[in-house]
Length: 145
Image (cartoon, rainbow, N blue to C red; front, side, top):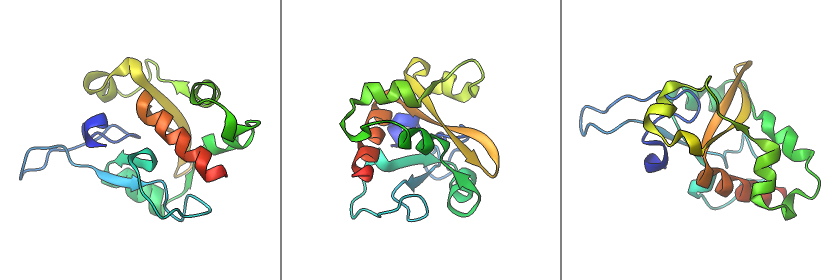
């Protein structure tokens, strides 16, 4: 996960360097958290994990969090049988000039997508590189079964 996002938060783009080793600091949020999904799975993969800063991680776990894009998923007919590229076309917002500069500077900007969420009653996005978004959609398809 660190390699895909280089330790930058997938929501706000923040990171800070650890004094000990100079690497970017991040916390792994597992989408499999019982506050988020109905049926907790017994496995964890990078597909269902997010790279977050401490603030965004705490806000998702303990604050007001609403994954708006899940409503879009619930409206996709035959979601489990659709190809990931078809789902990406329906779900994502391709990131644009309003995207945090940190993503443009440190990550492959042309390969990023955004899924809409509400965090503490504020509209935000979770940013994904293409490969991670495809894995995440496959995870969500398993969740719907």
